[in-house]
Image 1: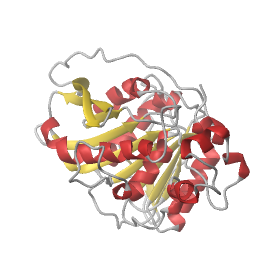
Image 2: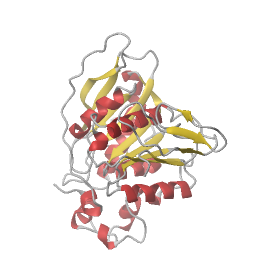
Image 3: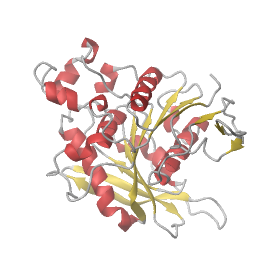
Image 4: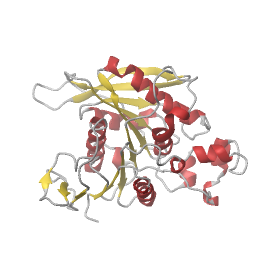
Length: 342
């Protein structure tokens, strides 16, 4: 099945993943994940699953909202949800309209905005901090996620179960994302599927095509950090590099992490080192989303990501290397992080 991103850019197929089979950890072990609520309605005809770490943390934890790709459903990200949750955050795995035959504009984007509003309104009831919300989009989910991250409050609230809260997350994370188009719109983006999604070509629906790409909204949220992760050999690497450059040109903090040669699916797998890096970076971004930036620009040594204990090392312009737990403090200025030395 092809979706908008398949037709607008090269990308891999959707990977269907199995459900949770997690057991409680023994004392002293790292937390694991469990589903604490399923099929929770957050918008009209839309639902999500809630994952929480076990054991339950003493203090409220950050919230991660996961968006699946163009044409699948939230089951595609179940294993990623578990892996991120085990890093000590609450995860909302969201079923949204996507860009499939059931999706349309602006309804699919409204779904995403409703999910953020839901996290703000209901986060505390799941042991989470509604002031630390990270919106994470995989593949085409990154397109809608990036728009909502910049302009979520511009979308209608009538379909949302929570209507009094902001739809703007505290940070945005894209995983092997497709990030849209710039003006003038190249003809390669104007496919039959895209025209159907927008109910017309750009000449017929110019506002919809403009509003549905994050490039139209850059510069509106100068303090909101973004983290973009992509495989070194993935066809969407160039797209991530272009969007990262546009974010930084607009004065917004952004971090681009180029992981070892990896495809669309291995970045959401709990069995790969790059998948575990995605989980750690996502959880770190969510936890730190309420912190202010301001430290000197940092870069990262391009040492190869190992299959064991080796980690990236963060380097300040005037200091010696110091090891960190998850690559580097995500929002201390802008940086490009190449984890495989390429």
